[in-house]
Each structure stands twice: as C-alpha cells, then as structure tokens.
Length: 97
Image (cartoon, rainbow, N blue to C red; front, side, top):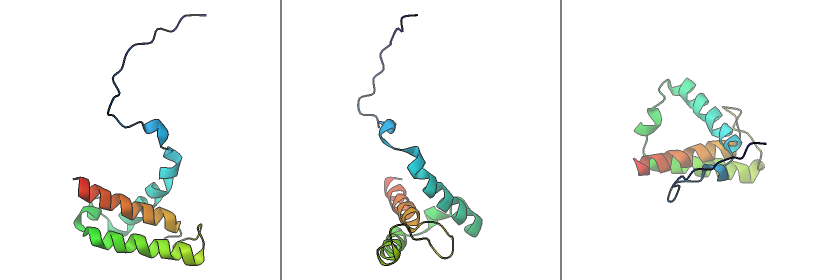
C-alpha cells in the first residue's frame, strides 16, 4: 500500500460545499428550465423586481400549506417548494449582485 501524502490547502473563510446536497438543488434546475422555456431568456429573472419574487415565493408556500408539502404547481407540474426556493434564490441573487 502506498502512503498518501497530504498537502496543505487554505480553506478558511470559503464555503464548505460538502454541506449542501446538490441533489436538493435539482428541483431549482427544473424550475429554471421551465422558466427559460416560458420566457425564452435565461437572464429574464434579473429584470423582475425582488418584491415580485417575494410575493411568488409566499404564494407557493401558501399552496404547500393548503395542498400539502409535496403539492405541485398546476402550470409547471413541479413542486411548489422548488418554485419557492427558486424565487428566494432570485431575491438573494438580485441582492448580492
């Protein structure tokens, strides 16, 4: 067996992506694909006021409360939770940029 020599890497202050399940982001990808097909512009989300995304996120959360945690959006067929997460991601993206 060969000895493994470990080097040094400064990761202080950098996000630890191993703490995020990339599988959980799959639903956001599906919502984004739906949106790009609907609006034809992958950057369209940057042209919408954050308040609109807040309202949309709340609408999807209310639907989850009324219809169940795993309920789906009638138009897209995708989970309301994934739509809510996508809207919150847009808010974060607009604030961060």
